[in-house]
Image 1 (cartoon, rainbow, N blue to C red):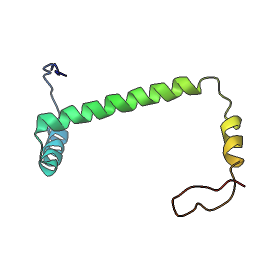
Image 2: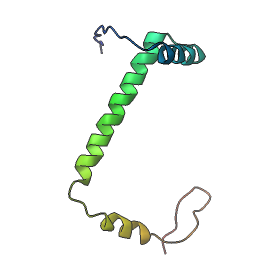
Image 3: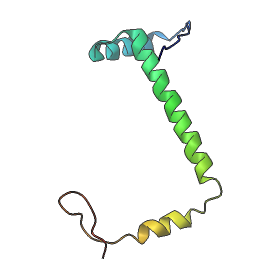
Length: 85
């Protein structure tokens, strides 16, 4: 799959730019790659928040809490599974 790219001119205050450069060096990537990854992460987080907000629309808060409270109070086995009684 071929990825198309768009150019963006970005002006940052000196302090956040310097911090981003340090993190990019630490991660072994260019400043451009670091900023691109940060934007992708933020866009993903915003998309996830919108998805869950849409899914939760109209749900009564008491229903999921009651469901969680109904879970058995037993420790998991060696593989992390719960044995339901």
